[in-house]
Image 1: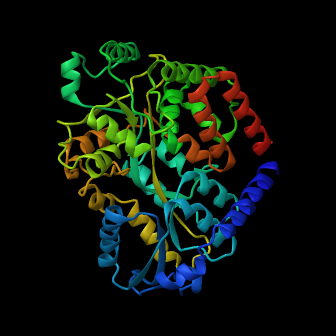
Image 2 (image 1 turned 60 degrees about the vertical axis):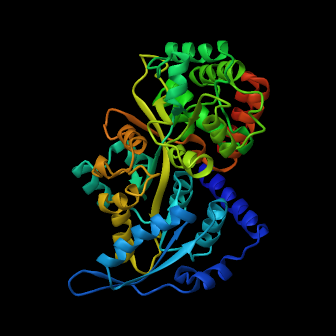
Image 3 (image 1 turned 45 degrees about the vertical axis):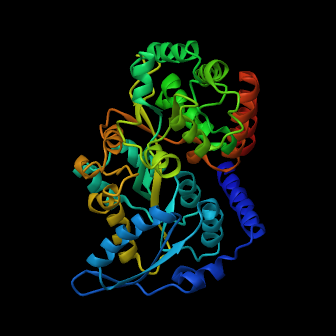
Length: 446
């Protein structure tokens, strides 16, 4: 009961925020042709079982990413010519509020991009369609692992389909500078610290960190927590079965605090993500701990002449302790289906398509994308960095897939964690950040 009440309170709060934020959803729907907001379409299939009718899909990509997604949707339309597909583009920063508002009002899109934290909230309110049949076939085919299914599920029932993946915990570097320093990409934690010390002794800044944007600090916390505490503790923070004062969590904060104290730059909280990325590209810092998307950002925002694999490359953050199981921190975008869609056949068909190797290969060919479906061949990726990132995607069932922690939890706990990590950069006070997180976790989850 406490969980149900907490979810309802979060939904109410988000509704208030959405109302205060302006940008009426109904006006946006009229301009973009959003049938989900202006009137539900009829559910129809043809006599041979093909889908037809109207269908709305909501997404948040812009620019070149939107163009790539449009190419993916074109593939669905080509295969389903009797479906009229309405696109609804919402800025990422407004997505959660807009979706919460629409679903609470009973007028959500038929299919929508969504993060796992919102899947958990919406599933508890019975807003989403269960997708057991799709997942049963994908697991049987080996397209996804049970660990990936768990991220898309609530209490064992899958409600989301993977579409766009990202591999986190990657340390980006410049090979030429490593050669000048006489170091190689480390494979153990001890070697990792030795490389960092070598950089400091040479008068180099070890890390570029975009702490002013808040979220880049979580890109540090996740892999450190995963490597130090292991997957059970990591996932326990998501579902509330592990407390933030658990000894393994405390140890992870201690390890992160040592990295901050010894190797973070003085301007950590003054730089944003793009500034930090370009600082590493320009040589103001040697390393950057970030996800696979840096492969696209480094060229798009810093220097379009960069050659992946030659001018910049990455190595996975080394395993902290041989006794901990193999893990891979990930993030990415999933899609969910409105439980009250008036065209369930077409909506299910679109969800199945988005989770397929065929759909994901379309974007993978254009770069800056890791396909979650393991049946997408590696040779579709346009460069070595994308290929190597895709190889790290947890396709092996023995490797635990751990989804971006704060995005998985969501809500006020996510907000407090991001702000607490900024303060942790300032003071490295382990007791303070642990107490902060225990307090908010207790208050929200009861």
